[in-house]
Amino acid sequence: MLTKLLSSQKTIYHIILFFSFSLTVNYFVELKIVNFIAYVLFHLTLIYFIFYFFHFTLYFIFFLYGVLFDIYLINNMGPHIISFLIFLTAFQFLKKFLLNFSSFKISYIIIIIVFIMFVIESFISRILYNYPINYNDLGLLFLISVLMFLPSLYMFSKIDKL
Image (cartoon, rainbow, N blue to C red; front, side, top):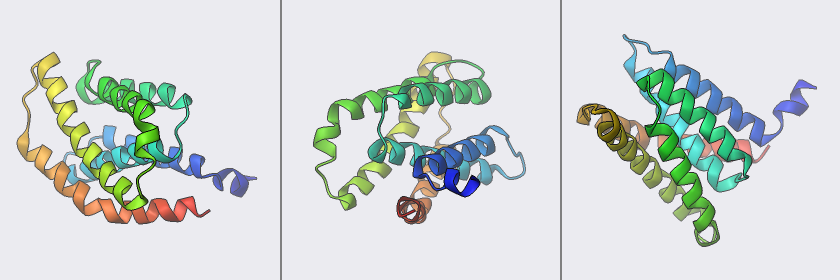
Protein backbone atom coordinates (compact mmCIF):
# COMPACT_ATOMS: atom_id res chain seq x y z
CA MET A 1 0.00 0.00 0.00
CA LEU A 2 2.75 2.45 0.95
CA THR A 3 4.81 1.63 -2.14
CA LYS A 4 1.78 2.25 -4.35
CA LEU A 5 1.21 5.60 -2.65
CA LEU A 6 4.84 6.62 -3.05
CA SER A 7 4.97 5.51 -6.67
CA SER A 8 3.06 8.59 -7.76
CA GLN A 9 5.40 11.33 -8.93
CA LYS A 10 3.12 14.04 -7.58
CA THR A 11 3.21 12.50 -4.13
CA ILE A 12 7.00 12.39 -4.17
CA TYR A 13 7.19 16.03 -5.24
CA HIS A 14 4.82 16.99 -2.45
CA ILE A 15 7.01 15.12 0.03
CA ILE A 16 10.07 16.98 -1.27
CA LEU A 17 8.22 20.30 -0.97
CA PHE A 18 7.08 19.55 2.57
CA PHE A 19 10.51 18.28 3.67
CA SER A 20 12.38 21.26 2.22
CA PHE A 21 9.77 23.64 3.66
CA SER A 22 10.22 22.06 7.09
CA LEU A 23 14.00 22.40 6.93
CA THR A 24 13.73 26.00 5.79
CA VAL A 25 11.45 27.21 8.56
CA ASN A 26 13.29 25.32 11.33
CA TYR A 27 16.18 27.73 11.42
CA PHE A 28 19.55 26.21 12.28
CA VAL A 29 21.75 29.06 13.48
CA GLU A 30 24.97 27.06 13.26
CA LEU A 31 24.03 25.46 9.94
CA LYS A 32 22.66 28.38 7.96
CA ILE A 33 23.69 26.66 4.74
CA VAL A 34 21.19 23.82 5.43
CA ASN A 35 18.36 26.36 5.50
CA PHE A 36 19.55 27.93 2.25
CA ILE A 37 19.88 24.54 0.53
CA ALA A 38 16.36 23.58 1.62
CA TYR A 39 15.03 26.99 0.52
CA VAL A 40 16.60 26.61 -2.92
CA LEU A 41 15.38 23.02 -3.24
CA PHE A 42 11.87 24.17 -2.38
CA HIS A 43 11.90 26.84 -5.08
CA LEU A 44 13.43 24.53 -7.70
CA THR A 45 10.85 21.85 -6.95
CA LEU A 46 8.05 24.39 -6.97
CA ILE A 47 8.94 25.74 -10.40
CA TYR A 48 9.55 22.25 -11.81
CA PHE A 49 6.18 21.20 -10.41
CA ILE A 50 4.51 24.12 -12.20
CA PHE A 51 6.01 23.19 -15.54
CA TYR A 52 5.32 19.48 -15.54
CA PHE A 53 2.33 18.97 -13.22
CA PHE A 54 0.25 22.11 -13.63
CA HIS A 55 -3.26 21.89 -12.23
CA PHE A 56 -5.58 24.46 -10.71
CA THR A 57 -5.20 22.88 -7.27
CA LEU A 58 -1.70 24.33 -7.30
CA TYR A 59 -3.22 27.72 -6.54
CA PHE A 60 -4.38 26.41 -3.18
CA ILE A 61 -1.07 24.62 -2.50
CA PHE A 62 1.02 27.66 -3.47
CA PHE A 63 -1.19 29.93 -1.40
CA LEU A 64 -0.80 27.63 1.59
CA TYR A 65 2.99 27.41 1.27
CA GLY A 66 3.19 31.17 0.65
CA VAL A 67 1.22 31.91 3.82
CA LEU A 68 3.30 29.50 5.87
CA PHE A 69 6.60 30.87 4.53
CA ASP A 70 5.50 34.42 5.24
CA ILE A 71 4.36 33.59 8.76
CA TYR A 72 7.46 31.61 9.72
CA LEU A 73 10.16 33.63 7.97
CA ILE A 74 8.84 37.19 8.01
CA ASN A 75 6.04 37.20 10.61
CA ASN A 76 3.91 39.11 8.09
CA MET A 77 1.94 38.24 4.98
CA GLY A 78 3.06 39.19 1.54
CA PRO A 79 6.27 38.43 -0.32
CA HIS A 80 5.98 34.68 -0.78
CA ILE A 81 2.25 34.65 -1.43
CA ILE A 82 2.57 37.39 -4.01
CA SER A 83 5.56 35.92 -5.83
CA PHE A 84 4.23 32.34 -5.84
CA LEU A 85 0.82 33.34 -7.16
CA ILE A 86 2.26 35.80 -9.71
CA PHE A 87 4.47 33.12 -11.21
CA LEU A 88 1.69 30.54 -11.19
CA THR A 89 -0.69 32.93 -12.93
CA ALA A 90 1.98 33.98 -15.42
CA PHE A 91 2.66 30.35 -16.22
CA GLN A 92 -1.03 29.69 -16.74
CA PHE A 93 -1.16 32.40 -19.40
CA LEU A 94 2.19 31.48 -20.99
CA LYS A 95 2.05 27.67 -20.78
CA LYS A 96 1.16 27.15 -24.45
CA PHE A 97 4.20 29.19 -25.42
CA LEU A 98 6.58 27.79 -22.78
CA LEU A 99 5.77 24.12 -23.28
CA ASN A 100 6.81 24.33 -26.93
CA PHE A 101 10.42 24.69 -25.82
CA SER A 102 12.76 21.75 -25.55
CA SER A 103 13.48 20.27 -22.14
CA PHE A 104 16.96 21.81 -22.33
CA LYS A 105 15.52 25.32 -22.69
CA ILE A 106 12.87 24.67 -20.04
CA SER A 107 15.59 23.72 -17.57
CA TYR A 108 17.29 27.08 -18.12
CA ILE A 109 13.96 28.85 -17.81
CA ILE A 110 13.45 27.11 -14.46
CA ILE A 111 16.74 28.37 -13.01
CA ILE A 112 16.11 31.89 -14.34
CA ILE A 113 12.65 31.92 -12.75
CA VAL A 114 14.16 30.78 -9.44
CA PHE A 115 16.63 33.68 -9.57
CA ILE A 116 13.84 36.10 -10.40
CA MET A 117 11.70 34.75 -7.55
CA PHE A 118 14.50 35.34 -5.03
CA VAL A 119 14.92 38.93 -6.21
CA ILE A 120 11.20 39.64 -6.30
CA GLU A 121 10.68 38.19 -2.81
CA SER A 122 13.50 40.41 -1.54
CA PHE A 123 12.09 43.53 -3.21
CA ILE A 124 8.55 42.87 -2.03
CA SER A 125 9.71 42.43 1.55
CA ARG A 126 11.73 45.64 1.18
CA ILE A 127 8.76 47.56 -0.17
CA LEU A 128 6.10 46.18 2.19
CA TYR A 129 8.04 45.84 5.44
CA ASN A 130 11.21 47.85 4.91
CA TYR A 131 13.40 44.78 5.40
CA PRO A 132 16.92 45.42 4.15
CA ILE A 133 18.04 43.37 1.17
CA ASN A 134 20.94 41.21 2.27
CA TYR A 135 23.03 40.94 -0.89
CA ASN A 136 25.38 38.38 0.68
CA ASP A 137 22.48 36.02 1.39
CA LEU A 138 21.01 36.67 -2.04
CA GLY A 139 24.36 35.90 -3.66
CA LEU A 140 24.66 32.74 -1.58
CA LEU A 141 21.17 31.69 -2.71
CA PHE A 142 22.20 32.24 -6.34
CA LEU A 143 25.40 30.22 -5.85
CA ILE A 144 23.56 27.36 -4.15
CA SER A 145 20.96 27.44 -6.93
CA VAL A 146 23.63 27.08 -9.59
CA LEU A 147 25.34 24.25 -7.69
CA MET A 148 22.08 22.41 -6.98
CA PHE A 149 20.54 22.92 -10.39
CA LEU A 150 21.91 19.92 -12.29
CA PRO A 151 21.71 17.44 -9.39
CA SER A 152 18.12 18.44 -8.71
CA LEU A 153 17.18 18.07 -12.38
CA TYR A 154 18.80 14.65 -12.36
CA MET A 155 16.80 13.72 -9.26
CA PHE A 156 13.60 15.06 -10.84
CA SER A 157 14.20 13.06 -14.03
CA LYS A 158 14.64 9.90 -11.95
CA ILE A 159 11.40 10.63 -10.11
CA ASP A 160 9.61 11.20 -13.42
CA LYS A 161 10.68 7.77 -14.64
CA LEU A 162 8.95 6.00 -11.75
